[in-house]
Each structure stands twice: as structure tokens, then as C-alpha cells.
Image 1 (cartoon, rainbow, N blue to C red):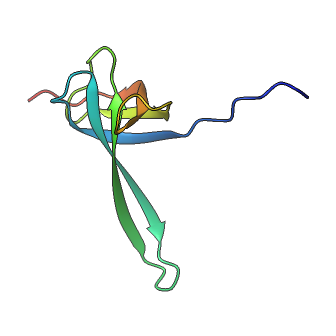
Image 2: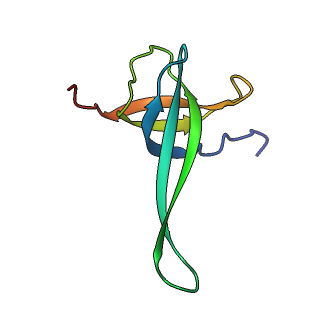
Length: 89
């Protein structure tokens, strides 16, 4: 097989924490894992900068981000879809 197949890109779901930049959002992904010794669940958070081409994501939205080629110094993710909109208050 001489063709080079493209691997699966990682997909994460998280909440938008900042939308102040132009075409960029900050997404916080929360994951829970069990401690290997104490067997209690620990919550770990990680923040990713994602490209939002249409600028339609706002703070509080739940979005799905997908791995992408580097777009800037810190951006390696793009928004693939908005899972849930934040309620306007």
C-alpha cells in the first residue's frame, strides 16, 4: 500500500470559557479519572485554544473541538460543532 492514510483526529467536548479574541475561543475540557491507589475520582481540567471561523460560540456554550494542523502559536484545534447553547440571562 503506497497511499498514506490520514489517522483519526482527536475529538474533545468542553465548555467555552472565553470568546474575547477574534475567531478564537478558549475551551475548558473537564475529565474525571480514578486514582490508581485510592480509587477516588479526580477531576482534571485542561484549556485549549480553538479556531471559531464564524465567531458564533459564546461563553457557556458546550462545543466539540477537533484536532487540526497548527493555526497559530497556541491554536491546534478547530470547532467542529456546537453541542449545546448557553442560556441567555
